[in-house]
Length: 440
Image 1 (cartoon, rainbow, N blue to C red):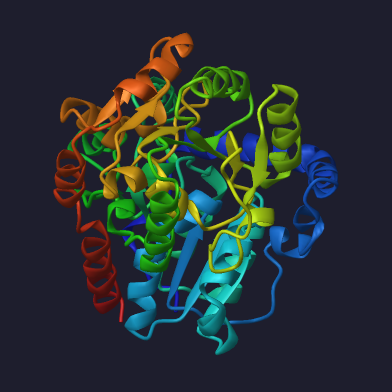
Image 2: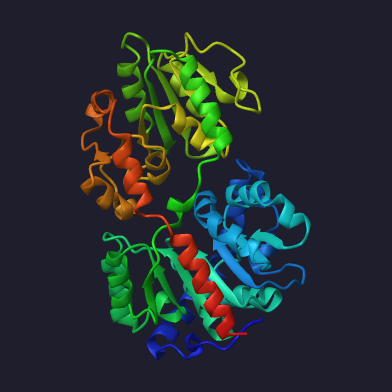
């Protein structure tokens, strides 16, 4: 049931004029947007499915809480909160922007989807009309948005509907804040000031949201710290590690386009060691699995693919003795790969788009190395670096040497850092409970 909320008050005139121009631009761009989805469908057919949902069209339903988790990473962040809401008997509608996020929802939430407690669909593209249609159909009482971008039409439609929309796991990196603050000064408002409020990752992030006049700002922390490693994956990883004897194992987790050559050069250097190490390479995007395999083999490295040498239970079905690189061409098994590793390099940081999640390897007590672009993980990146559990590789040519030097790092320090940051999910759940009681 949509409820009255203070964010329903009108935005300043200049913000409304800017919104009108923004929405007009969307109308002009829509043919290109639909073509974009069809082009992406050539690589991932999921982009061509359920296009009506991207217009806010779906069967009539009713939800207590709406959760927006843009893609796979955000869904994983949201999962501890989702599980808590389901345990409290609440009905959820979950939106994604990518097929990867949608697939992850169906894999993780098959039972509640089957019994009708969860609806999964694509998020509308950012037109007020589409979002208003979506909110009128689903009638959520509270909205939780797990995303780093702030979509003006989404927040505007929620404000007009009186829907309490909260940005959770929220951050504005230092690199992005000047632009956000410029928008606020020029227009007199920002999408976050049109929301019900913000549950920020850190005090530093909270201060930035206050500067944008978010109505309410609290610090809840980062929910990824609350993700418990699947014990079957940890056990399988420990078995594989034991079978490798004295071989060192390095994991390259979430390698993205543009940094492959950096990791290939590190592979070639590491492979010269005696005894031969095993390198586990996990690409960020499934559409590059085949190309990555080809690039590794062209570099003269001996490759095996997880899907060909490990069974469904993560048992080894073929020898890895002569293997330089094990390609992690699978979904949802990151904790398995990380458990096997002595040292982890998390990808993304060797390109300007920025480093990805370092929390999972820290939970397992692994030394972690990232490239120089860590603005995307400002929290907990800075804190982890200050605590001595995260190392930044400023020069890609030194990555192999840094990986070798990091072996034997303190597992206790990384795990203690991880434990000190637990609890965000419970704080968000308590907040949702209070919000629903207030709007009952």
